[in-house]
Length: 275
Ligand code: KIV
Image (cartoon, rainbow, N blue to C red):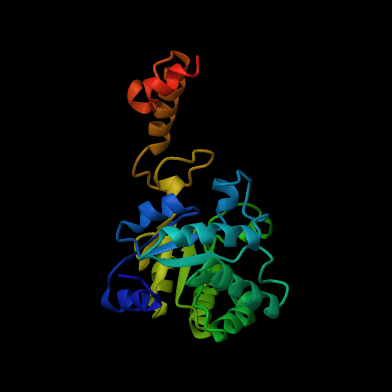
């Protein structure tokens, strides 16, 4: 069954937890979509886990469209949410709507996600008015790392927590269908979750959120450059891959691969004419 924004709404109403994962290509999207996952995010985290950059800031709208198209081909059931990268929605409301539209029209996204609260409210309202579902994103928003002075947990003081709560309430008023809460204290996420009637999706925000999201390379043990405290590794696929790749390289070097069963034959008669 295809997940839609209504699935997200009903899940909150009925107290069912939502699960989301990131994906950036066809084969991974297909594997993820074969589970009961509710949503797939083409996150700007691709700057780090796909491109090997230090942060998400250099990711472009064209890159997100490219990866959204690939994910779209592998996805039947999950809601496809595409990230709006840094500066694709900050310059003007018109540009924000135009870029959100490109993610839907060219990429095939069902919804877009963008980071921020009061500072991006006009953009969110305009995108929602254009009938494009918007997922908000508050807390440790990676596009603000220079302003935050690094990847630092947000909402730890009374003032900062109150600002997050206020932003969440205003995001709901602006029409977002869901809000990602990243890198904030569990109790603050709980208050936010109780203050809004749309689902909150946590990453490093504890168990009271209405759902959870993880970057798949983190939860499968495929990306060890930096493993945040909030990540649970459900498998060590990186180790399995390294072992398999080492076996392949060794077998090639030792002449053990390919075997007869991996090769194609030519008729003896045709072959004899080659000598
Ligand atoms: O870019 C991303 O993958 C994200 C999630 C971690 C929420 O924004």
